[in-house]
Image (cartoon, rainbow, N blue to C red; front, side):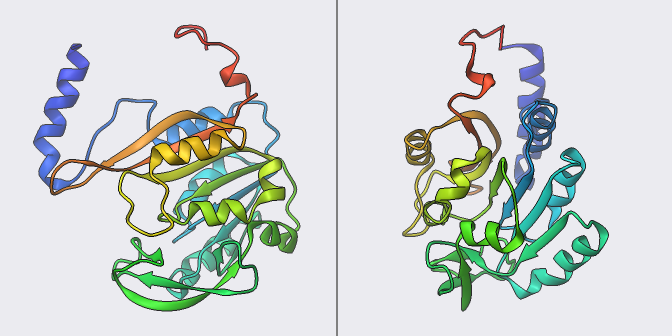
Length: 243
């Protein structure tokens, strides 16, 4: 084990009671986004599923200065934050809904007190009926053009969303997705199942970032997976040193 790894391990052991973890440079969300932003990809539109307060979009708008952004989030509590971001940046817009297959329909959302753990078909929190729009319908509604970058912070509802994005997925170059190690909702694909599901649709994992361990026993809870199309230049070399 290198000295840097030992120091990182020591630091994480000291701050473990806080639930915070440190990672080496290059494996956090922003670092990978910066790397992708520097590639010649021609991204025209970014779709932020689970936009929450718009923090991810606010950060990423700076990295993709020529792209339009559309957030998708169903919670009324998030609306003031998304309205503020929309007023600040004309390249940002949003749809107040859940993304899913039943375009124009509704779905039951379990809303947790902190809002961040709210889950479709979840078992914890106040139940609300919220509207649904397919990803393809959102793209048409907002007049978005590919190539696309899609972000998922959708708490286990990823498969129904992907099934609503057939046309959009065909023009998508990159995806970042929160994936899970526990089946916390009926719709959840575990992270290894999601990797296989995406592989069958022409995408491979390019980066793993932002590991979150369960505080009670340290078990892996979730991880953010970056996917790129199987023919992306990042996969041209199988060498460790010549990527």
